[in-house]
Picture 1 (cartoon, helix red, strand yellow):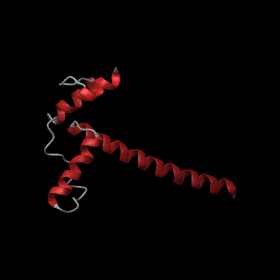
Picture 2 (cartoon, helix red, strand yellow):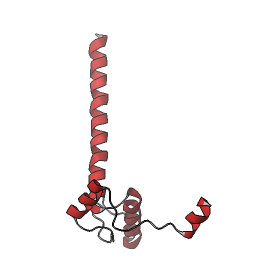
Picture 3 (cartoon, helix red, strand yellow):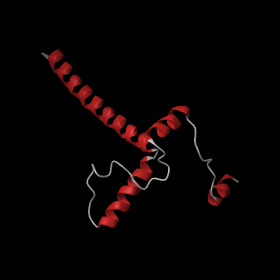
Picture 4 (cartoon, one colour):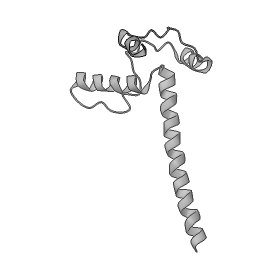
Length: 100
């Protein structure tokens, strides 16, 4: 009787884990397709909410229209696969002070 209970609970935990990992995978696909980070994504949602004066629906926030790094779906994925950047990373003055 305990083997069946352990198997059942293990299956439930496995299904929940698979669903959570799948949701994270979908999130990464959305971020890579737009060439943004999660921080840029969250800031864009905050800006939209502040501009609208109300909460923005989650499905309206999936596409960030004011993203300067969004080249195209194909170019964004090629950049990700090749691990290349189109602009060099230039450290700010504050970061240079921290390095020294």
